[in-house]
Amino acid sequence: MSELSLLEQDIAKLIVETLKLKVDPATIQPVAALFGDGLGLDSIDALELALAISQSYGYQLRSNDPEINAIFSSLRTLTKAIEKNRTK
Image (tube, rainbow, N blue to C red; front, top):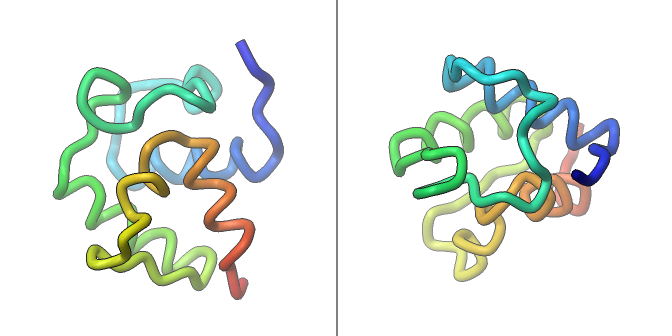
């Protein structure tokens, strides 16, 4: 099990709180899938999460971004994208 960086911890907490998931944010594996067999998120969850990320970090995730599937593939890839593009 990989340790989570501080930003990964914050984003894991944001995911759990935003989507009202019944999991401990600390148990989210950084490279596990967020969708499907991983955390089980769906497209509605992605929209809610994108809004929360925009409000918290100033990073606008766009559904037409060719990298969107890669960005949302895991907690770690999402964190790296936020880290690179955040304005807050």
